[in-house]
Image (cartoon, rainbow, N blue to C red):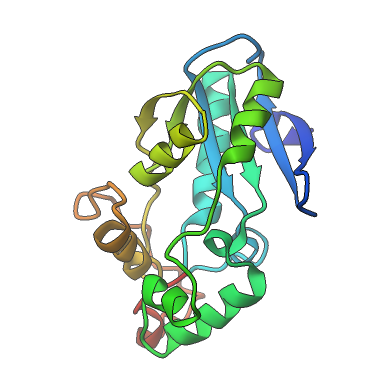
Length: 209
């Protein structure tokens, strides 16, 4: 598949007992290889399709594809787990609660969900099919590393994956850092400039996804 980052191979996987189809987006020859640069990325329709500025999901996906293209080899595993596993409709409900002042964690809890419902058992099977022996995981989330290892994925190392924050997702990033254990230094990150065509309503700066 031709992309703005160059050609990738795309493999679709259907999870047994689940209508969702996951994708492996591959650059270069990864079969039989270890320490393969990998991004395990969960679907975010609002960010990736509608270009929502409430999160950094689209930027993280783009950055992962770009880093793999630069390296000449790697894998993005795109998982259909919208809203950290709660689904698109409930994610929109969570947005409404966030507009009322709750952060992403408390909004999910208000709806009766755990902080993160994502699962990674399918990742081990996808990597086995691709014959990838171990991965260097691009993530800021140590819990994702632990979850993948519990499900049988050999993660050799975590690769920091911070994208430029901007005024509308700073609250979201801070919540992920302070309440969900994500590792990054927002204070030293270079902020993206505010876009002149975007109305940065102060009421939107509380939090995001």
